[in-house]
Length: 218
Ligand code: DX5
Ligand code: ZN
Image (cartoon, rainbow, N blue to C red; front, side, top):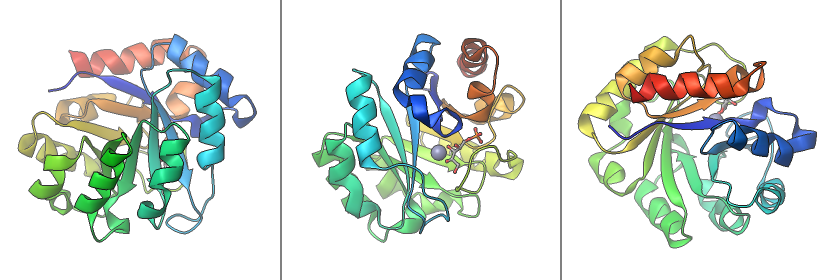
């Protein structure tokens, strides 16, 4: 199984200090930063888009921006996110009819490609053809749309199913993940861990990052 990558979700951070918050997380041991892009269509909320990501990538040189695109037309934003310095472009399989072509378009812009599934989408929605070209699979453990929700445990078997089918791929979990829920995620085979509230809400985020990391790597 690939090793642990911790990707704090900046949705739980102070948006007025976004670059500083990202730097604080990197200093605390995070390898990636999870940027939740919401468009008000795929999900009801609106968060941030390419201009904000561009400011962050300028303010935090070398940052790996793990862009979670909760958008209705994922094809539309590939160039903007690439120009803004996005490192990984993760779209929802529910939002596109041609995931393989979209992955190729993402790769053409030198970003890694991720494919997300919402809680009601079965793991079989990720076909072998898709996984063969994708760099990462994201199993949502809450309904996409906002931070601070309760972890949905019934999503965990999908992680195991995907890990069995694809032993080498990065598998990310996102939503309600923290020290109390990490063990089931890690045992199921996820290695990329998103946590918003659990990290940014902690007195010592570096300790939470270390806890999450060691749960995956042991
Ligand atoms: C939910 C987002 C998540 C969220 C995670 O739609 O995709 O990334 O910010 O936040 P927590 O860890 O607080 O559930
Ligand atoms: Zn997310």
